[in-house]
Structure formats: C-alpha cells, structure tokens
Image (tube, rainbow, N blue to C red; front, side):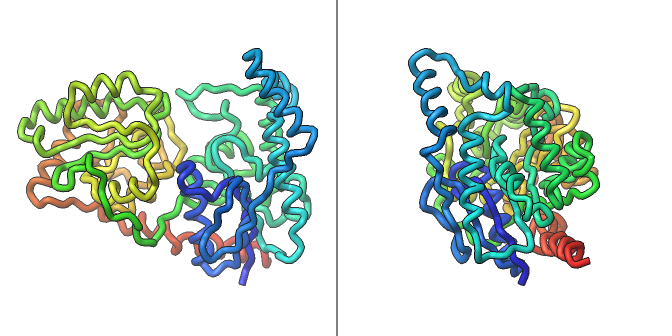
Amino acid sequence: MKKILVVVESINVNDSSASKGRVALIKNLKKCNYDIKVYHYTRKDISIQGIPCVAIKEKKVTFLAIVNKLQLIFYKLTKIRLSKYYEMLTGFSFSFLNDAKSIKAALKNEKDFNPDFVLTLSKAASFTAHKAILGIPKWHSKWLAYVHDPYPFHFYPRPYNWVEPGYHKKQEFFREVSKKSAHGVFPSQLLKEWMGSYYPDFLERGIVIPHQIQDEEVTNKVLPNYFSKEGFTILHAGNLMLPRNPKGLIEGYKEFLKNNKEAKKDTQLLFIGSNEAFNEYLNHEKNNLEQLYVSKGYVQYNEVQIMQMNASINVILEAKAEISPFLPGKFPHCIKADKPILHLGPQMSETSRLLGEDYKYKSQIDDTQKIAQHIEELYQKWKNDKYNHLNRPDLVDYLSIKNLKTVMNSLSSDASS
C-alpha cells in the first residue's frame, strides 16, 4: 500500500471553499486505498474520520512571532502597517514565515511514516506548506505541490490586477517550488497551462487532479425557510468577489420575469454567501424584487449542499475576462447535484471546457438577453415535467475516484521506473 503524507493548511470544511476541496481530495485518496497521514495547521482540534491527523502547533515564542505581535500592536496604535515594508524586502509577512517554520518543525518530528508521496495543500494565497517542504530536501523527489490558483497575485488574468509587496520574491519562491517538486498538481488543465507559461517546469511535470466529488450522503436534509421547495429556484452559492458582478444575472432574471409574468409567483433567485463587494447594489435590488433573496453572509456547508441538490438551476458566475483558468470549488458540487448549470463567464474557461462546446446554457456575465433566454428555456422545461437533469456521467467520472486512481497510478509507475 502506497503512503501519502499530506501537509494541509486547514481541514475545517466550514472555513472556506478551499478547505472543502482539500478535504474532499484527502478522503478520495483514502478511498483509492492509499495509506494517508495528515499534518494540518487548522489551529483547532479537528480530524478526518478514519485518517490519522496531527494538528501542528504554532511556534509562538520565536523572533518572528514576537516581532509580528509588536507590529500588530504598533498598527493598532498608529494605523501604520510596518509589515508591508518588510514584505517589500523579503516577499513574505512575519506571520507567513513563522507559520512555515512551525509546519517545518512539526514535520521534522515525523519518524515513523515513510511516505511514497508528500502532498502539500494550501488555501488562499499563503502556500505556507509549500514553503515548509522547500526546507526539507529529502522529500523533494516525492513532493506533489498542489497549486490551486495563480501565484503570485500579479499572475492572475485580468480583470484581476493585484500586485503585492515583494512580488518578485514571491515569484522566485514559486520558481523554486516548480523546480524542486516532483510534480505540480493543478485542479484545472487551463491553470496548468497558465502557470506553465510562467514556470516551464510545471508544463513538463505538471498533472491535473480536478476538485473531487464526494459520494457521501448529504447529512442535512432540511431546506431553509427562504428556499421555495415547490418553485423554480435559481441558486448562486459562493462569494461574490469584486470582478464577479451579479448585475447581468439579476437584470437577465428581471427580463425573464417581464416576458413571463406568471413566473413571478413560482420562481426565485438566491445569492448565498459573502456578498460584501455588492452589498449596496444587492440591498437595493432585493427591496424592489421580492423574488430575490440575498444571505447576510456565510452559510454552513451542509445547508448549501442541500440547496444545490434541490435547486432548479445552479449558477457558476466568473469574472468578465478573456480567460478564466480556475476550476471553481463548487463545480463538483454542481455536477453531483445533477441539475442544469448556468455558466456565466468566458468561453475560454475551465468550466466551459469541461461542459463542452455543445453545452447550451452559457453566456458572458453581462449578456442579459441571453441569460434571460436561458432561464426562460429551463423554466418552460421545468413547467412541463417539473424536473431537469444535467445528466453528465462523463463529468461525474472525471471528478471522482475513477479518474483520481488513473492519475495516481501513473505517478506510481513513474516512481517505480
């Protein structure tokens, strides 16, 4: 039985969509009959059933930790952030470097588990697990470095335009990751190609392991009161970052209602998740559109799952751009739900690539007329038979254990040759 040591920043599925995806991958690797041991930096007592989990403790009495606390106190008193000047020089914050050292120290205490692979899983833009493994050369030949998003931020495609302090140092850090890891692992083929254009080693030795479908039963079967059980429900679940403008979807829905007056009584449009970037706009719209519901913030994972399973349409909303190399974390949830997906995003995107050229229900995020047409067609189908299926067993296979085994077996063959 092959052994995988997983080093992950968080295994708390309720702290982010990233953590949901990482835990799903860990569970499916276990189902592929790998011997798994997890080191995690969740900062709380938490585990994954059936898998040995070691909670990494933060090293609090170090120079980096003390300086970080002092600069936080200084910021509270003066509103001057000293850390950005340090990041301009080194590329990283005091807390990032201390976290990486904490993870590295914990891993160096591991004596009994001799892994065939070491898989690093991060979230957001930290990649502290990757930084830690860079400092443990004995594992580089076994290292699977998971890259969930472009890094650094200035490598995001437009309209994202963030440039961080010390970006050149971050770039060099990731060049090291690309060269010293055995394989870069990407959830998206387009992301592998995108990152490979900056780091050619990823093109040569990168592999694709998409976000995973979990075959577990949904534990919560109770729909919230605001969800219409008998109606036609259009659901957008997930955070609305600034480039993901919901206006086209809302205007398209309003156009649909204008053309289908009877739909006012049996349809609804739900936005579930953090919507801070569009609070003012969404609050104005929901005061004038009774069919619109906007959550007040984060909604628990199991509650979102049951809504996705019962929605009439699941919406995947991406930025208006020429390319979107990301595979959204909710993509496997939408495939598992087996309901039509309304994809609002670029034609050149991983979601569009996987759905296929012939998939009908796609448009740019601001094409209100096409959005209205798609909603109307799906609504009329719903009225006729009360249920629509996505019916994509090919994507179920691609996002499940079957494909994961194939990819991991190819690595096992590489390792033994």
